[in-house]
Image 1 (tube, rainbow, N blue to C red):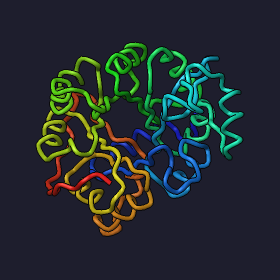
Image 2 (tube, helix red, strand yellow):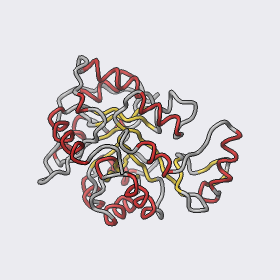
Image 3 (cartoon, rainbow, N blue to C red):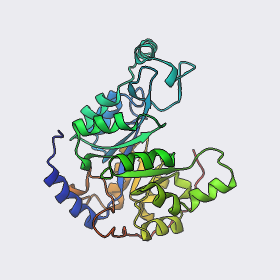
Image 4 (tube, helix red, strand yellow):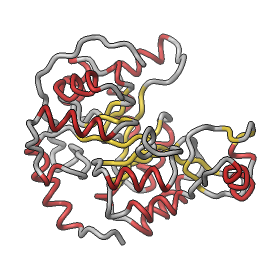
Length: 290
């Protein structure tokens, strides 16, 4: 089981709702600071710099191993066509190692909150089995771009905090509208939060999501100016390759006065009565990607 007691986490979450501090989430670990993303080294670095959460991706290999890797292909072949041993043999030639999902969960459990992205369907039961082995529900959330994956996880275990990612490449105009106005999708999939590409996070979008009780965790933001604007806008979390910059910007905005109980605990609005999230006022100018 996790190192943190459930009672302690519950008390901190109650205090956190009052603090209303945007969380800084290390994208694929501290990916811009580590030699390789989605590695044990990148996750240890995120823990060391005291990011609030660590985000990572999960896929399944041909021999049914759950591995932490972002891309659908590795070494010019689909991950689902390769064995874990074959993948790591090639990875080690390039100077790194692909960790299993279980290794990452064991490392992070009780040390940092896990924001887990499921990249495909078909292995939801095994993913939940591993999470149950190491963690309590307060220690992680699960999200996906795929509505059926989120719905299946929620059906298998309604206690798991789940979210929907928004911002697919080239979705077409109808689907894009369903990303800009996702409430029906969120309800149908049983989501507890929403994770949009940052450009969707207009003042109106954040207000609408909060009004319906959905926290907003935006991705992927790396420049100090944009991180600051989104924090002032009132998003609940910022996913970034540079959690060190995110923590620094947040500290400046709050004049260094970030409560200890507001660090490292995932904020959701799924308490009794599904209370609406708070909405901060702020302004965000248009900023181009990159």
